[in-house]
Length: 279
Image (cartoon, rainbow, N blue to C red):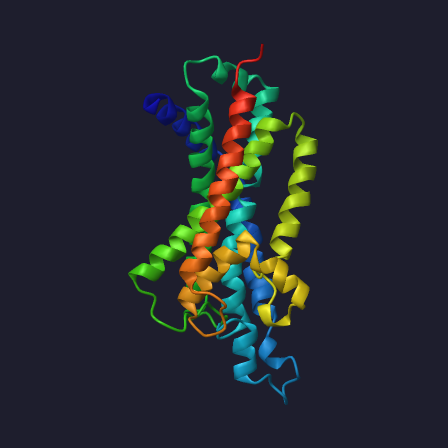
């Protein structure tokens, strides 16, 4: 089991490493968002240069973040953790079309090793990309004249662990989801249509991009249970602690863990069924 898992995981990592264009494309979108939308919006001046929004109201709307870029860039960390997982299921479908998956199933490797190796390799890339975006958001404001991510308090070891765990959980959850779709579906056109139907609504019904304080009540209710919101709020509350959050960060993290466990269980069952020998 361990030997098969290691060999298959190494194969998946080599495939990712040999495709730097995909990594560059995955980074290009969040970088453009950070440079265009993040730098362009200034919610402190919504009332015009002569009537800036009061700092207290702005902080409440942005859940304690000092400015919109800080709020937005943390959302982009979750954004890239989700969008970088989109092609994991497509790779499964292409492997089925080219007969690679069929040959893999014919080896002594158990279904758990086949699915698990793809899950680990598929989740590693978005985790690393998300951490890169987080570091870039902080570095971009250092001596460049651009806005940057500015934590409002020191983040201790526990906070850093919670941030990393939140990134790992959200990446693993969506990798599981898209892998399961890849094992179940047969055509790439169907896969990408379904992925877009799931991906965009999930992102846009979260508070990853929208200021929490500007959302209508019904959208806040939906966003409160959105796993992307749970991941983002875990990170933001550690970076911008304030009384604007309904729950402590550990509660958001626990809710995200429940979502991830549920999605991984469903994905494992679907993948096991798809990988079982056909009679």
